[in-house]
Every structure is written in structure tokens, then in C-alpha cells.
Amino acid sequence: MSTTTQTSLIERRRTIGNVLAEISSQRGPLNEAQRQALRELSREADQIEDQVQTEARKNYASAFRSWIRYGLEPGQFNRGVSAEAISTLALAVKEAPSLALAVA
Image 1: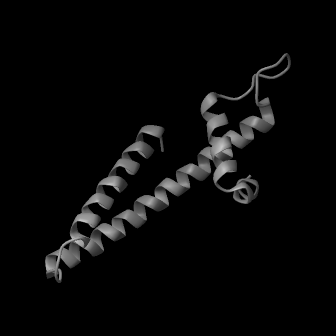
Image 2 (image 1 turned 90 degrees about the vertical axis):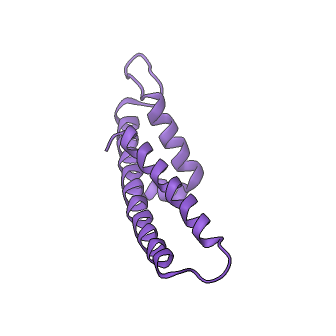
């Protein structure tokens, strides 16, 4: 999955979240169509989140392998890793240090 695909998934997730918030904020009981929409949107959001998580793990694993192979920064004997890979590694360590080590 490309970065563009992941971005579109994240945008769709954001849209679903907005629609869910709109439906949930209505006063009084929801009608059957609204309840069905909530169930379907929640299911879709779960599927999208699974895809986003899978892609994030793949990106991290790729960045980690590049770091091990090529070093972090370019030098005389190595080419270093891309800025995107550095960003991915930094984000993983910042958000969940123990998970970053476990995934590698």
C-alpha cells in the first residue's frame, strides 16, 4: 500500500468519524436507518484502522531494516536512510518505545 493509499484511508477514517459524531450527537433515540448507519460505519472504521495499522507496521519494519543495513546518516561507507524512514523510526519510538523494539 502506498503513502497515497494510506492517506486516503486516513481521510476516509476522518470522514467516518465526523459522520459518526454527527449521528451520535442527535437528540433523542435514533431511528433504524441511523442505527444501521452507525453499525456499518463502525465496521468500516475498524477495517480501515486494521489496514492503516498493517501499513504502519510494514513501513516501520522497512525503515528499521534500512537503518540496520545503511546506517542512520550517510557516511563514507554507508548511504544512510531516507528522511521518511527517519521520521517513521522517530515516530515509532516516540509513540510506543517497547512496541518499536518488539516489531523489529
